[in-house]
Amino acid sequence: MTLTTRRQLGLFGLTAALFAPADGSGAAPFKPAQEVMPANDGRIDYIEMTVSDLTRAKAFFTAAFGWKFTDYGPDYTSFEDGRIAGGFARGPAKPGGALIVLKARDLELALETVRQAGGRIVKPIFSFPGGRRFHFADPEGYEWAVWTN
Image (cartoon, rainbow, N blue to C red; front, side, top):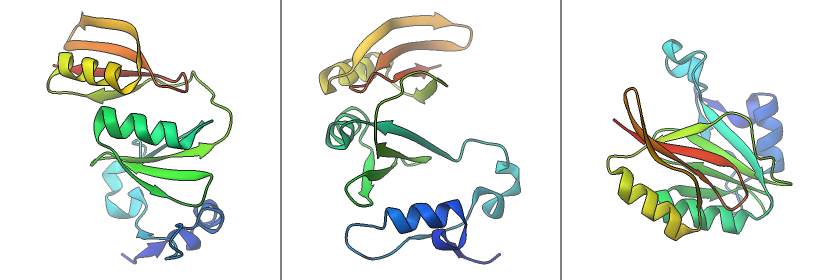
């Protein structure tokens, strides 16, 4: 396997050129999921959404879930939650689409943390076969869910 940079991967290269890290260090090397482990082919690898206020999005997800962010210029930030990565691009929010579900050991604590961070609970905790979950809207209006088993 060869180490590849984002600049060498077409669309990722364009993204890296447009959203280089604010410190000028260039694009971080990474391996696409297919190179890291063929078994990951077809699995969620990166999640990206547009938000009208990057600062507000970063503050919310840092306070609610402890996510880490890397800014790539004034109009893009990437996040890592310790398992999956994604990004927020500055633009009009587009609530809807796929429901992204986060895992929590303590569902009640997660709900209260989301509420205190500025999230709006849209479905309180409910049971379903296999566990319990709740849904919330982030400050941009995107609906998310948090579950536990």
